[in-house]
Image (tube, rainbow, N blue to C red; front, side, top):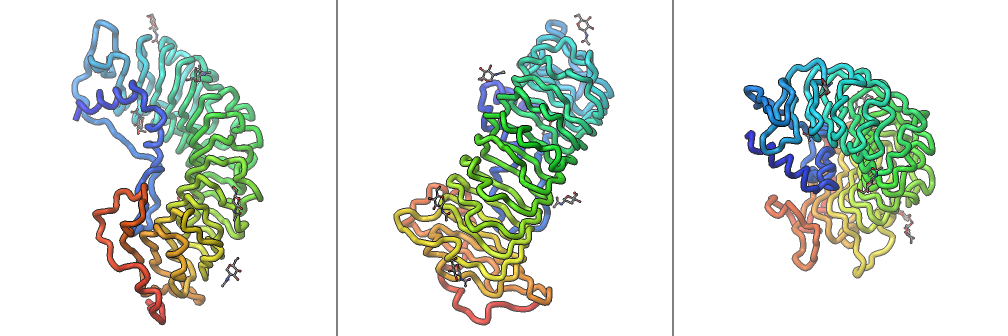
Length: 416
Ligand SMILES: *[C@@H]1O[C@H](CO)[C@@H](O)[C@H](O)[C@H]1NC(C)=O
Ligand SMILES: *[C@@H]1O[C@H](CO)[C@@H](O)[C@H](O)[C@H]1NC(C)=O
Ligand SMILES: *[C@@H]1O[C@H](CO)[C@@H](O)[C@H](O)[C@H]1NC(C)=O
Ligand SMILES: *[C@@H]1O[C@H](CO)[C@@H](O)[C@H](O)[C@H]1NC(C)=O
Ligand SMILES: *[C@@H]1O[C@H](CO)[C@@H](O)[C@H](O)[C@H]1NC(C)=O
Ligand SMILES: *[C@@H]1O[C@H](CO)[C@@H](O)[C@H](O)[C@H]1NC(C)=O
């Protein structure tokens, strides 16, 4: 498997940069056809365990503890070695991989010679302390991994060149007001699984990052929507906070939003047109307290509404008018664990002609019992007439049933 590594490094070199950042957070995962209850992990781990004998290269130098592949002399691999301190990093090194070690502090002289670093991976260590300004002096640094450590403070200041900053799974509870100042090139910021609350995210904290495309704030302690987000944002993750409402016109400033993940919050009443976002493709508001549906923007493909308190899905509300020349793109709808008493009106297929599946699963009755609608999963073939450019990945799934067959049945559910 060792040969894969150079390939990966090559990938980094020849710059599919903008896209590879999304691999870390699974934005592009397939939607769950038969979802299970496990919460999806945010990160994919690539653990390196296959190194044998440390390899020393006399020409350019490599730390004795580490491995520098001959073909990729600017990379140094020091991961999974039980290291307690950062080894000496020679000047020519541009990528250093130190993940899965036992490093607990980043001191000002630990990286002193490595002025050309573009990427530092210090994830999965025990870092509690970062000396002031250690990272700021790397004026070429593009990517900094510090996820899965014990940081309580944001490692301020950071170099202005930074494009991707990963700080998930730490204990960060405050951000200096000017934490992000000057980080004009940051495209991805991951702060999931920290201890951030509303008081730390002020109006101006994130506003100046004009290139920010992805912001992950899941699993924190937010009670309201983060203010002042930059209008460049395309992916916003706020799962598992305690957000109970969305201010009027909040998303007007985020016209580029493609995906919004807000499951496991406390959303209760939202305005009918809250999610009227013309570029939105994925919306997850499962595990909230919503009582009714809302306007579905035209480009939305995947909608997650499970584990809410919806008794009746009003299709007229989701789709006030049908225009055959301008049809909606919705393909997947998940509505299990609500309070539905019957399947959604078949009008939904006129409104959303591209729908492939509606996942009904179990529903809760008024006395709290679980019930099952007769139709648990509604699937149908895609009509060949529709030229659905996004008709990906599920051609080979076994689809059963045809449109419009089962919703006339009555009564609609079994009790369990
Ligand atoms: C950095 O470490 C993480 C593990 O925490 C890993 O997922 C990621 O792929 C590493 N980055 C590179 C470029 O090796
Ligand atoms: C930095 O480089 C100098 C000269 O090459 C060397 O003596 C020193 O040990 C290096 N320090 C570290 C921390 O790498
Ligand atoms: C930001 O990125 C641009 C384009 O890649 C680059 O020219 C510029 O120098 C970067 N800014 C900083 C502060 O590194
Ligand atoms: C949400 O966060 C709490 C801690 O704040 C944690 O106990 C719980 O497991 C998380 N739930 C999910 C679904 O991640
Ligand atoms: C959605 O927004 C568009 C403008 O972007 C507007 O024309 C339309 O009336 C809105 N629809 C609803 C239901 O609010
Ligand atoms: C569905 O929504 C429409 C438009 O908001 C409303 O006029 C209608 O009364 C609603 N129907 C039900 C059954 O709630």
